[in-house]
Image (cartoon, rainbow, N blue to C red; front, side):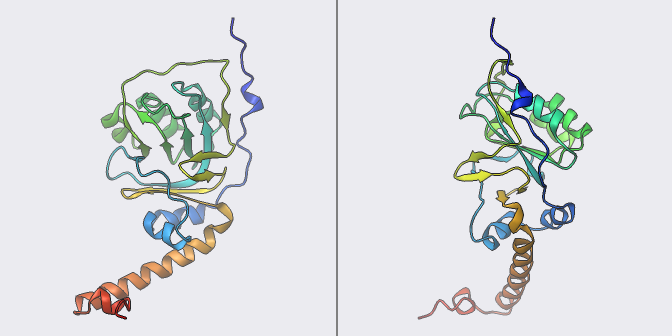
Length: 222
């Protein structure tokens, strides 16, 4: 008989989160702007895309490290999550499984989650859009997952997605262009810089419509 892992040893949801006001502000800003304003950091793998093109999310990260081909730790994370959290899931490189579907999205909606970001696949694509919880994934897969009660996983601890370390409580923002993870302590500064960048771009658009060239506006002539 396989020994049972004690999940309480590696699960925590008691950490400081980015503020709701900052989450609301970030939701109105493009991910590319946030990434650039932050100093070109935090871009999560571009292979992770919204299941439906209109999906957008923002919220504090609840990182999850799951064994490959097994979604028991996602169920555990759903129980540990707080309203407004974005589950950010590392699947140990085993991408081609349907880790999440209509039932889990419904559970996430009931618990008030702001969304799911998973470095793997999901299933029930059309139904996920109907449920309404934003889901960002590598794609769709019907391949079933296991439930290994002896396997080790983590909830509420740092994970690595691509070359970005996602810490619990960091700000996660996703739109049709991609996903960005911003360190919690830097968020107010990044939001202010992002607003300034958006205002500057509107001015540049006005100058382009008036007939100037990008070479002139950006001083590329030498």
